[in-house]
Image 1: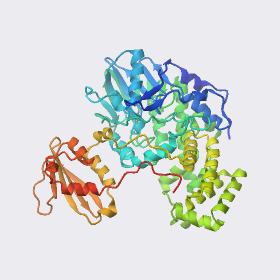
Image 2 (image 1 turned 90 degrees about the vertical axis):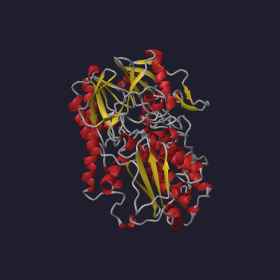
Image 3 (image 1 turned 120 degrees about the horizontal axis):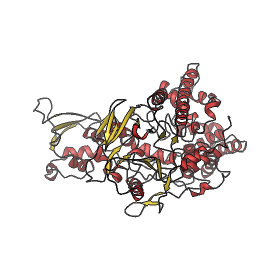
Length: 608
């Protein structure tokens, strides 16, 4: 492994530069007093690195745990360490433009209040979403509460569609896995959660969304918001399906969204997502360098700390550009030589010049799982070996392994032996089989928890550490809770009617609906449009058309409702408020809603 420059403290100087004041008191709570963020929970990171943590990850934790209000350059400020992401505030002629309002409404409101305490009670005159992940829009209502006068809300083209697909359609499963990835239920301690590489962790307040009003559709597009000129670069398919970098020419400042941060990022995040395009990511960073590299004196992102000076900005962009290009191209080279994703992940190493750069280390993404993701993008889940084409599911496969090894006790003994010899990876494999084959074996659970704990304490990658330690917690009997709700009413209000109906279709229990056929027409006068729903063969589909459909011989709806969007939200939530429902005419609707499957957001992950 290439030695890291341990005597280089430039990152610490940058992380502290421009500090104005901390959040005081450091706790952020909901209206009923529940703590959703504690900005001082990571004070223990000021100590020297203990044996229970990788020194490189501990250093990263020290950097991302700094919290408070910072000046980036004249007229641009950041609230950092108040959530997983940063909130950036750009002062305009009459107020302040907010970029990426954190995860929760509560933390965003606290960040805005901290800014106003030191910069004056400036109104919010615009908001910008850099991309479509929840930690960059979830706190929107903390900045623009209901009833706030309208302001421009800018986002890259496709933002709402992708925000919904990641955070609503697959939101239950993604949010569940995120609990393990971010370690939100782990104790903040030297042997517990020490961050996730991208930040400390995410807040657990109210997830919200204010729909965009201005789409950024092309690179080079310029917008004036409250007198501030902004020049945009679209970067779709990089860290998010809808993402953009943008420059403030008057301030000589460049926002790199989440495309160039101080870590190797994810090509496929452990919580789940669409696989990202590492080659496009690299090309867009090269384009950013060409577009803005000669102007910008400071580059900041939606995470971590800024970089000052043209030469240092160029170095950051070049190193990150080459990082993603190398991962992509070398994975393709090796897969074309016949190696599988797992084999490539074991073989591929970064060039020394890239490996010596702190920002290229895998604190959040990792070389191992990024290589497998690139393989997956091109080749899919199947590695070409017929033995892997039709394997048993985990529990059935585990029972057969354990039977072959001589039973649960023998499997646990073998796992302990490999653990004692230092082969923790194979020990985890064997003990995992023992747990899945015999979920009631407390000994198997205990020994696997110990192995996961050891693996976690040795990880440079923050998300791997959190996954291992949260898995150990589950094995010891504590099932981590889900605190964020991606399907809450605040999120639902921001969805289009089509997205609401898509979300409904995802919840249909197909087998129970096989033999039920019905049609519903929903007319929304505000949009002068009718949505025609059809349940057939267990699938709920819909089409829409302007106005009220003319009578048709081949389609007579079982129910036609005229309603507003808020009334539609009430109906989908089981609150019948329409005239038809009050007169008992909504039987087909009740039939449809009765076919929805339950939502189980706190399912087990490392046990059957």
